[in-house]
Amino acid sequence: MLRKSKITLALYERAKRRFPGGTQLLSKRPELFAPDQWPAYFSQALGCEIWDLDGRHYYDMSHNAVGASLLGYADPDVTRAVVARVEKGCISTLNPPDEVELADRLCEIHPWAECVRLGRCGGEACAMAVRIARATTDRSVVAICGYHGWHDWYLAANLGAEDALRGHLLPGLDPLGVPRELRATCIPFEYNDRDALERVFDEHGDRLAAVMMEPARNQDPEPGFLEFVRDGAHARGALLIFDEVSIGWRLHHGGAHLRFHVNPDLAVFAKALGNGHPIAAVIGTRDAMEGAHTSFISSSYWTEAVGPAAALATLRKLREKDVTAHVARIGAMIMDLWREVAARHGLPVSVPDGYPCLARFAFDHDQANELVTLFTQLMLESGFLAKNAVYPTLAHTDEIVAKYAEAVDKAFAEIAQAIERGDVTDRLNGPPAHEGFRRLL
Ligand SMILES: Cc1ncc(COP(=O)(O)O)c(C=O)c1O
Image 1 (cartoon, rainbow, N blue to C red):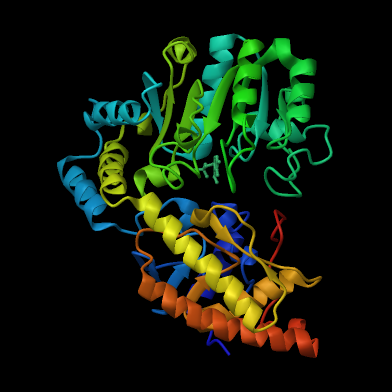
Image 2 (image 1 turned 90 degrees about the vertical axis):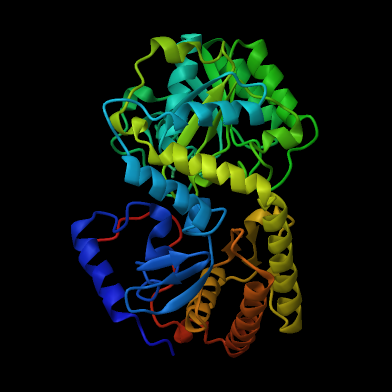
């Protein structure tokens, strides 16, 4: 049994009394992995290795900072660029020149785009893109598909609706604190569902400012779907916004939309763009960005210098190392090993045919959540941060995947035994993982 990381777990107990929700990002709540077991804090993170506050070492075979680090933690080239910048000053009364260089790089990679605005976080940049689209079109309604952050404009989709964002976000999100007056300003539709979007066009077409969506999340769009969305939006005078916050750079160098040859009017980037340093961008055509001239969009820390310096170093390395090819290969290896090891132990595991750069598996069992929690617990014992999804990075080598394969083999063997004996819950050293959003205290 795992000797618990006492200092690390104690700090989280303290944090829960201080921070409503425990952590600043829902996806980093230990309760979503293995309550009372998952080490909430790191003292060091290098490559795909993490040390908790008790000095325990793990390989990160989970979501790797929800995809915010595609090169691996503390990448030496990015760190060098950041340290050089820090030593020369990160902020001043004047603006950082790297921001212009970064804007040029983004428009070179996306030749359809001519203008850029920078922010620091994904949800913030999505809100910025929606503001720009509303200002440019002088309309209010936005149709969405996917997760686009925590802001009012987005959570408004759940106002007066029965969990309309289920499937796009997380079940259980009440739009508490979001003005009721925003009702019917954000309308969700399902990916690849032309009829659903057609209904949105019919009902809201003349008030539609934009259609905002992830161009892809787990798999390619059906042939013609993205073109259908683009043409339908344009026919109603609305803009198309692609949210590339999670999939950008990971599936394709630049936006995933480049792979599908469908250009939006605006696109949003964050996460992997700074490889762990906050930087986000909205890029767009000159016409679509018109609203950014007239709408007030401004923030002090959007002028700090580390984000652009980190992004330039990250973009250079992402290209040089062909990171998209690397993460696709590592992810495919991991998906194969899940299939092979599960078959060997007779475990009911399915591995959907999604993108290997966002590899995932599921237990096809009525105790699926307990089984995933038990998997996390067993993997922690073997020195891995793991759940049922892996977002590979450049730092994940074949050797690390081989070590992971051994640990998965051991974990799957024990899980098969637990299922056979019917004692899955008894084997858990804490409660099962939470599924979705809920109050902690
Ligand atoms: C597609 C997408 N958009 C927006 C966001 C929000 O980004 P952030 O967490 O940086 O605010 C996320 C985060 O997971 C995302 O996946």
